Length: 115
Image 1 (cartoon, rainbow, N blue to C red):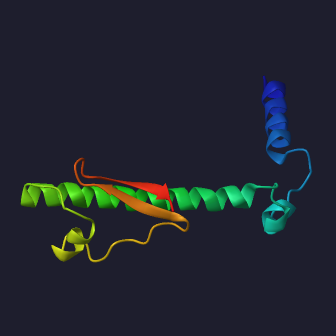
Image 2: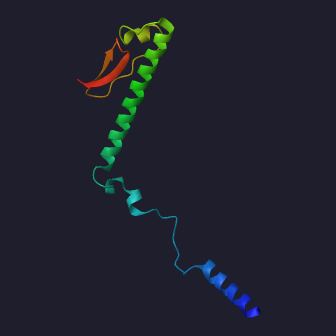
Image 3: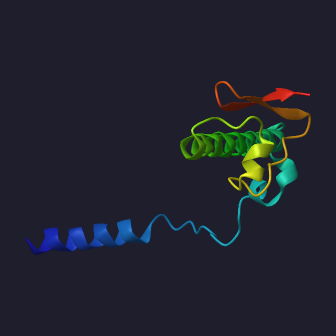
């Protein structure tokens, strides 16, 4: 029985000690330190993703303010500038480059379209 306990302790010590290879965790992988070494198109995809997120947030914010205006006034605004005039918005957000906001007063919806 003592032999088995001794073997178990030796096995546990070997297991805990590992195989002897040391990893240096203070040195990051080479790819992580150089953005230029990122796969082709990765940085462009990141920029397009951010632009898409900004567009979505701006359109969502405008549509929510239109709905709020409708609840308060009982109608949709005649144009987006009326949201600013009635103090629902501080200012209209700038559309993304090469795009414009298209407002449909009948549906009370804003969309983006190319200029």
